[in-house]
Image 1 (tube, rainbow, N blue to C red):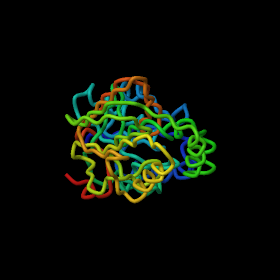
Image 2: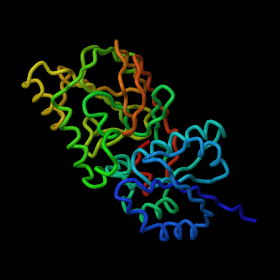
Image 3: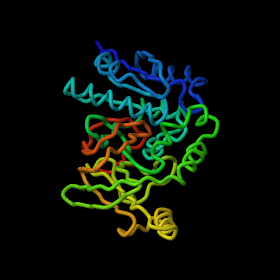
Image 4: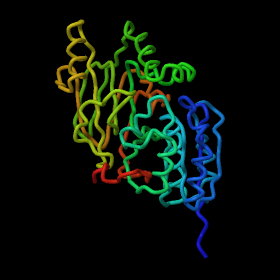
Length: 309
């Protein structure tokens, strides 16, 4: 007798422009035709998934699928990672992107059409991708601090829905006139970098906040390494112009922009630094330890060849 397959379908109904609402019957039919008995879980908070629900309830399921934005994905990944630790085995995951930006989905070339994404989940291939951990929290594609990084979690969902990516640009513009810097020491594996910085990110993605990520031409989603950038504090408008130019042209110089590849990052500052993890607030720390957990997540994709390694 064939064992029944079970799918847990987590939906954030407030993510993005809620396009998934009109596609639900089609998506559920796809899962049913693929032999899955599907249980639907609707999130109750804006862009949040109850990680405890996943840890305590999802162990009986063959695959966990989430539909929402980057924040929904982040919380689902965190729950799945904790569940894997509990079960000591792999838990497959699928993602139907429905957010305002969908950085990670675009990086993995997951379809932005909910029905197409559902088809790829049941007919695609399993890819094993890296997951980051900042202190005790997981992230799937970016940990960042400094200039503009609070925009994603301080911008209202209604504004995101109305304006899409433009909402982030509008909110970010409000921060230009009040640039804060942090004096810190940063270790990328065993290499030390010191200075005063206005921005930093540790990534495993081709885009961040809807913008093409810099320095990631040869990046891999499963090589166990992050691509990291630190932006030094400009002394004058000319310096700021050089920094912006370097970021736009992907021509970075250590004088203004530090770019490193590493499996581990440790950042120490004299004051607490607030962090953003996949667009969600990730806590504030004087000492921040970040590690890459290689090939930790099993996610369904259309074409496994897109993920080298």
